[in-house]
Length: 336
Image 1 (cartoon, rainbow, N blue to C red):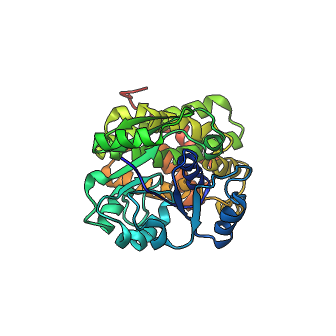
Image 2: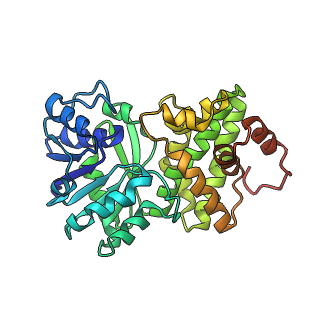
Protein backbone atom coordinates (compact mmCIF):
# COMPACT_ATOMS: atom_id res chain seq x y z
CA UNK A 1 0.00 0.00 0.00
CA UNK A 2 1.15 3.54 -0.74
CA UNK A 3 1.05 5.46 2.51
CA UNK A 4 0.42 9.16 2.96
CA UNK A 5 1.99 9.81 6.32
CA UNK A 6 1.35 12.07 9.29
CA UNK A 7 3.47 11.87 12.42
CA UNK A 8 1.93 13.39 15.54
CA UNK A 9 4.58 14.51 18.00
CA UNK A 10 7.86 16.31 17.35
CA UNK A 11 9.90 14.88 20.21
CA UNK A 12 13.02 12.76 19.68
CA UNK A 13 11.16 9.56 18.71
CA UNK A 14 8.52 11.26 16.57
CA UNK A 15 11.18 13.23 14.70
CA UNK A 16 13.30 10.10 14.26
CA UNK A 17 10.41 8.07 12.83
CA UNK A 18 9.40 10.93 10.53
CA UNK A 19 12.97 11.12 9.26
CA UNK A 20 13.24 7.34 8.84
CA UNK A 21 10.19 7.42 6.57
CA UNK A 22 11.18 10.61 4.73
CA UNK A 23 14.72 9.43 3.96
CA UNK A 24 13.20 6.96 1.50
CA UNK A 25 11.61 9.80 -0.46
CA UNK A 26 8.20 9.69 1.26
CA UNK A 27 6.58 13.01 2.09
CA UNK A 28 5.81 13.28 5.82
CA UNK A 29 3.77 15.91 7.63
CA UNK A 30 5.02 16.21 11.22
CA UNK A 31 2.79 17.86 13.83
CA UNK A 32 4.88 19.76 16.36
CA UNK A 33 3.35 21.46 19.40
CA UNK A 34 6.13 24.02 19.90
CA UNK A 35 6.07 26.80 17.28
CA UNK A 36 9.80 27.45 17.62
CA UNK A 37 10.64 23.78 17.00
CA UNK A 38 8.31 23.73 14.01
CA UNK A 39 10.05 26.77 12.49
CA UNK A 40 13.46 25.31 13.20
CA UNK A 41 12.65 22.05 11.39
CA UNK A 42 11.28 23.85 8.34
CA UNK A 43 13.95 26.53 8.14
CA UNK A 44 17.08 24.79 9.39
CA UNK A 45 16.29 21.08 8.84
CA UNK A 46 17.13 20.44 12.51
CA UNK A 47 15.35 19.71 15.78
CA UNK A 48 18.02 20.82 18.22
CA UNK A 49 15.58 20.80 21.15
CA UNK A 50 14.79 17.08 21.00
CA UNK A 51 17.15 15.50 18.43
CA UNK A 52 20.32 17.60 18.23
CA UNK A 53 22.97 16.83 15.65
CA UNK A 54 20.72 15.10 13.10
CA UNK A 55 19.98 16.72 9.74
CA UNK A 56 16.38 16.10 8.75
CA UNK A 57 15.12 15.15 5.32
CA UNK A 58 13.73 17.82 3.02
CA UNK A 59 10.66 15.59 2.63
CA UNK A 60 9.52 16.47 6.18
CA UNK A 61 7.10 19.36 6.58
CA UNK A 62 6.53 20.49 10.16
CA UNK A 63 3.11 21.90 11.03
CA UNK A 64 1.37 23.33 14.11
CA UNK A 65 -2.13 22.60 12.85
CA UNK A 66 -3.53 19.11 13.48
CA UNK A 67 -6.20 19.28 10.79
CA UNK A 68 -3.71 20.17 8.07
CA UNK A 69 -1.35 17.46 9.29
CA UNK A 70 -3.90 14.62 9.39
CA UNK A 71 -6.42 15.28 6.62
CA UNK A 72 -5.96 13.00 3.61
CA UNK A 73 -3.43 10.77 5.38
CA UNK A 74 -3.90 7.00 5.54
CA UNK A 75 -1.09 6.32 8.05
CA UNK A 76 -1.00 8.32 11.27
CA UNK A 77 1.84 7.72 13.72
CA UNK A 78 0.98 8.74 17.27
CA UNK A 79 4.20 9.64 19.08
CA UNK A 80 2.99 11.84 21.93
CA UNK A 81 3.39 11.25 25.68
CA UNK A 82 0.73 8.93 27.07
CA UNK A 83 -0.81 11.56 29.36
CA UNK A 84 -1.78 13.72 26.36
CA UNK A 85 -2.67 10.88 23.97
CA UNK A 86 -6.43 11.17 24.65
CA UNK A 87 -6.50 14.95 24.33
CA UNK A 88 -4.58 14.96 21.04
CA UNK A 89 -6.54 12.04 19.61
CA UNK A 90 -9.82 13.77 20.46
CA UNK A 91 -8.63 16.85 18.60
CA UNK A 92 -7.66 14.97 15.45
CA UNK A 93 -10.38 12.29 15.57
CA UNK A 94 -12.81 14.07 13.27
CA UNK A 95 -10.10 14.44 10.60
CA UNK A 96 -9.27 10.72 10.40
CA UNK A 97 -10.39 9.17 7.11
CA UNK A 98 -12.02 5.75 6.79
CA UNK A 99 -8.85 4.22 5.33
CA UNK A 100 -6.53 5.58 8.00
CA UNK A 101 -4.34 3.24 10.03
CA UNK A 102 -3.13 4.40 13.44
CA UNK A 103 0.37 3.29 14.42
CA UNK A 104 1.10 4.16 18.04
CA UNK A 105 4.64 4.53 19.32
CA UNK A 106 3.39 5.91 22.65
CA UNK A 107 4.40 3.85 25.70
CA UNK A 108 2.15 4.24 28.70
CA UNK A 109 -1.12 3.52 30.52
CA UNK A 110 -3.65 6.26 31.21
CA UNK A 111 -3.72 7.09 34.92
CA UNK A 112 -7.40 7.95 35.25
CA UNK A 113 -8.89 5.01 33.33
CA UNK A 114 -6.01 2.47 33.29
CA UNK A 115 -6.55 2.17 29.54
CA UNK A 116 -3.94 1.24 26.95
CA UNK A 117 -3.52 3.55 23.96
CA UNK A 118 -5.49 1.18 21.70
CA UNK A 119 -8.42 1.29 24.13
CA UNK A 120 -8.32 5.09 24.29
CA UNK A 121 -8.25 5.35 20.49
CA UNK A 122 -11.31 3.13 20.05
CA UNK A 123 -13.20 4.91 22.82
CA UNK A 124 -12.48 8.34 21.35
CA UNK A 125 -13.14 7.29 17.73
CA UNK A 126 -15.63 4.36 17.94
CA UNK A 127 -15.83 4.08 14.16
CA UNK A 128 -12.11 3.23 13.95
CA UNK A 129 -11.95 -0.44 12.89
CA UNK A 130 -10.25 -2.65 15.47
CA UNK A 131 -7.68 -3.84 12.96
CA UNK A 132 -6.77 -0.29 11.94
CA UNK A 133 -4.75 0.19 15.12
CA UNK A 134 -1.17 -1.05 15.50
CA UNK A 135 1.63 -0.34 17.91
CA UNK A 136 5.39 -0.09 17.56
CA UNK A 137 7.61 -1.15 20.48
CA UNK A 138 10.95 -2.67 21.32
CA UNK A 139 14.50 -1.71 22.28
CA UNK A 140 15.09 1.54 20.39
CA UNK A 141 16.71 4.73 21.57
CA UNK A 142 15.77 7.50 19.13
CA UNK A 143 19.31 8.87 19.05
CA UNK A 144 20.72 5.54 17.87
CA UNK A 145 18.01 4.92 15.27
CA UNK A 146 18.53 8.44 13.90
CA UNK A 147 22.19 7.55 13.38
CA UNK A 148 21.29 4.31 11.61
CA UNK A 149 22.63 2.03 14.34
CA UNK A 150 21.32 -1.55 13.94
CA UNK A 151 17.94 -1.86 15.70
CA UNK A 152 15.22 -4.51 15.91
CA UNK A 153 11.66 -3.71 16.93
CA UNK A 154 8.11 -5.13 16.91
CA UNK A 155 4.86 -4.07 15.25
CA UNK A 156 1.71 -5.51 16.80
CA UNK A 157 -1.68 -5.53 15.10
CA UNK A 158 -4.66 -7.87 15.20
CA UNK A 159 -4.58 -7.92 11.41
CA UNK A 160 -1.36 -9.71 10.49
CA UNK A 161 -1.56 -8.70 6.83
CA UNK A 162 -1.63 -5.07 7.93
CA UNK A 163 1.25 -5.65 10.34
CA UNK A 164 3.31 -7.18 7.52
CA UNK A 165 2.46 -4.27 5.22
CA UNK A 166 3.69 -1.80 7.85
CA UNK A 167 6.72 -4.01 8.40
CA UNK A 168 7.67 -3.71 4.73
CA UNK A 169 7.02 0.03 4.66
CA UNK A 170 9.21 0.80 7.69
CA UNK A 171 11.95 -1.77 7.13
CA UNK A 172 15.46 -0.43 6.57
CA UNK A 173 18.81 -2.19 6.45
CA UNK A 174 19.48 -0.81 9.93
CA UNK A 175 15.88 -1.11 11.20
CA UNK A 176 14.57 -4.68 11.33
CA UNK A 177 10.93 -5.27 12.26
CA UNK A 178 9.15 -8.33 13.60
CA UNK A 179 5.35 -8.70 13.70
CA UNK A 180 3.00 -9.81 16.45
CA UNK A 181 -0.75 -10.13 16.93
CA UNK A 182 -0.49 -9.55 20.70
CA UNK A 183 -1.59 -5.93 20.89
CA UNK A 184 -2.23 -6.10 24.64
CA UNK A 185 1.06 -7.75 25.54
CA UNK A 186 3.23 -5.50 23.40
CA UNK A 187 1.61 -2.33 24.79
CA UNK A 188 1.86 -3.55 28.38
CA UNK A 189 5.48 -4.60 28.03
CA UNK A 190 6.37 -1.24 26.47
CA UNK A 191 4.76 0.67 29.32
CA UNK A 192 5.71 -1.44 32.34
CA UNK A 193 9.42 -1.77 31.54
CA UNK A 194 9.77 1.94 32.30
CA UNK A 195 8.71 1.33 35.90
CA UNK A 196 11.29 -1.41 36.36
CA UNK A 197 13.91 0.87 34.76
CA UNK A 198 13.32 3.42 37.50
CA UNK A 199 14.02 0.68 40.06
CA UNK A 200 17.17 -0.39 38.20
CA UNK A 201 18.38 3.20 37.99
CA UNK A 202 17.80 3.71 41.71
CA UNK A 203 19.80 0.58 42.43
CA UNK A 204 22.68 1.92 40.34
CA UNK A 205 22.40 5.32 42.01
CA UNK A 206 22.71 3.58 45.37
CA UNK A 207 25.79 1.73 44.02
CA UNK A 208 24.30 -1.70 44.71
CA UNK A 209 26.16 -3.28 41.81
CA UNK A 210 25.43 -5.61 38.92
CA UNK A 211 23.90 -8.45 40.96
CA UNK A 212 21.10 -6.22 42.17
CA UNK A 213 20.44 -4.80 38.72
CA UNK A 214 20.27 -8.28 37.17
CA UNK A 215 17.84 -9.40 39.87
CA UNK A 216 15.61 -6.37 39.29
CA UNK A 217 15.52 -6.95 35.53
CA UNK A 218 14.73 -10.66 35.89
CA UNK A 219 12.15 -10.37 38.65
CA UNK A 220 10.76 -7.24 37.00
CA UNK A 221 10.11 -9.24 33.85
CA UNK A 222 8.35 -11.89 35.93
CA UNK A 223 5.90 -9.41 37.40
CA UNK A 224 5.30 -7.71 34.05
CA UNK A 225 4.45 -11.11 32.57
CA UNK A 226 2.15 -11.97 35.49
CA UNK A 227 0.07 -8.85 34.91
CA UNK A 228 0.14 -9.32 31.14
CA UNK A 229 -1.14 -12.89 31.37
CA UNK A 230 -3.88 -11.78 33.76
CA UNK A 231 -4.96 -9.22 31.16
CA UNK A 232 -5.01 -11.69 28.28
CA UNK A 233 -1.55 -11.26 26.75
CA UNK A 234 0.50 -14.02 25.15
CA UNK A 235 3.23 -15.11 27.63
CA UNK A 236 5.75 -15.46 24.81
CA UNK A 237 5.55 -11.72 24.11
CA UNK A 238 7.48 -11.00 27.28
CA UNK A 239 10.50 -13.01 26.20
CA UNK A 240 10.73 -11.10 22.91
CA UNK A 241 11.86 -7.68 21.74
CA UNK A 242 8.94 -5.77 23.25
CA UNK A 243 9.40 -7.58 26.58
CA UNK A 244 12.89 -8.65 27.59
CA UNK A 245 14.56 -6.66 24.81
CA UNK A 246 13.10 -3.29 25.72
CA UNK A 247 13.41 -4.02 29.44
CA UNK A 248 17.15 -4.72 29.24
CA UNK A 249 17.79 -1.63 27.13
CA UNK A 250 15.79 0.70 29.35
CA UNK A 251 17.27 -0.66 32.58
CA UNK A 252 20.89 -0.50 31.44
CA UNK A 253 21.24 2.13 28.70
CA UNK A 254 22.78 5.49 29.53
CA UNK A 255 20.25 7.16 27.19
CA UNK A 256 17.27 5.85 29.19
CA UNK A 257 15.25 8.69 30.72
CA UNK A 258 13.53 6.34 33.16
CA UNK A 259 16.80 4.83 34.35
CA UNK A 260 18.12 8.38 34.77
CA UNK A 261 15.15 9.29 36.98
CA UNK A 262 15.82 6.24 39.15
CA UNK A 263 19.56 6.95 39.25
CA UNK A 264 18.97 10.48 40.54
CA UNK A 265 16.51 9.15 43.13
CA UNK A 266 19.15 6.70 44.29
CA UNK A 267 21.57 9.61 44.70
CA UNK A 268 19.10 11.32 47.04
CA UNK A 269 17.19 13.76 44.83
CA UNK A 270 13.39 14.05 45.01
CA UNK A 271 11.15 13.34 42.04
CA UNK A 272 9.91 16.93 41.62
CA UNK A 273 13.46 18.22 41.39
CA UNK A 274 14.40 15.55 38.86
CA UNK A 275 11.42 15.98 36.51
CA UNK A 276 11.74 19.77 36.53
CA UNK A 277 15.23 19.45 35.11
CA UNK A 278 14.21 17.15 32.22
CA UNK A 279 13.30 18.35 28.71
CA UNK A 280 11.60 15.09 27.73
CA UNK A 281 9.05 12.92 29.52
CA UNK A 282 10.05 9.87 31.56
CA UNK A 283 6.90 7.78 31.07
CA UNK A 284 7.65 5.45 33.98
CA UNK A 285 6.81 8.10 36.57
CA UNK A 286 3.16 8.23 35.57
CA UNK A 287 3.02 4.58 34.56
CA UNK A 288 4.04 3.51 38.07
CA UNK A 289 0.70 4.82 39.33
CA UNK A 290 -1.28 3.01 36.62
CA UNK A 291 0.70 -0.21 37.01
CA UNK A 292 0.18 -0.26 40.76
CA UNK A 293 -3.56 0.28 40.30
CA UNK A 294 -3.75 -2.47 37.65
CA UNK A 295 -1.93 -4.91 39.94
CA UNK A 296 -4.59 -4.30 42.61
CA UNK A 297 -7.45 -4.56 40.10
CA UNK A 298 -6.25 -7.92 38.80
CA UNK A 299 -4.94 -9.27 42.10
CA UNK A 300 -1.41 -9.66 40.72
CA UNK A 301 1.63 -9.44 42.98
CA UNK A 302 4.09 -6.83 41.65
CA UNK A 303 6.52 -6.07 44.49
CA UNK A 304 9.04 -4.02 42.50
CA UNK A 305 6.30 -1.90 40.94
CA UNK A 306 4.76 -1.39 44.39
CA UNK A 307 8.05 -0.15 45.83
CA UNK A 308 8.60 2.23 42.91
CA UNK A 309 5.08 3.57 43.41
CA UNK A 310 5.73 4.14 47.10
CA UNK A 311 9.04 5.89 46.39
CA UNK A 312 7.47 8.20 43.79
CA UNK A 313 4.10 8.91 45.39
CA UNK A 314 4.48 8.22 49.11
CA UNK A 315 8.00 9.53 49.68
CA UNK A 316 9.48 6.18 50.68
CA UNK A 317 13.24 6.02 51.19
CA UNK A 318 14.80 3.91 48.37
CA UNK A 319 17.03 2.15 50.89
CA UNK A 320 14.00 1.11 52.90
CA UNK A 321 12.31 -0.06 49.67
CA UNK A 322 15.29 -2.30 48.89
CA UNK A 323 15.25 -3.71 52.42
CA UNK A 324 11.53 -4.46 52.10
CA UNK A 325 12.09 -6.22 48.77
CA UNK A 326 14.93 -8.33 50.13
CA UNK A 327 13.14 -9.34 53.32
CA UNK A 328 9.78 -10.28 51.81
CA UNK A 329 8.44 -13.65 52.88
CA UNK A 330 9.99 -16.29 50.66
CA UNK A 331 7.50 -18.13 48.49
CA UNK A 332 7.93 -21.11 46.16
CA UNK A 333 8.36 -19.53 42.72
CA UNK A 334 7.07 -21.29 39.64
CA UNK A 335 9.69 -19.42 37.64
CA UNK A 336 12.98 -18.51 39.26
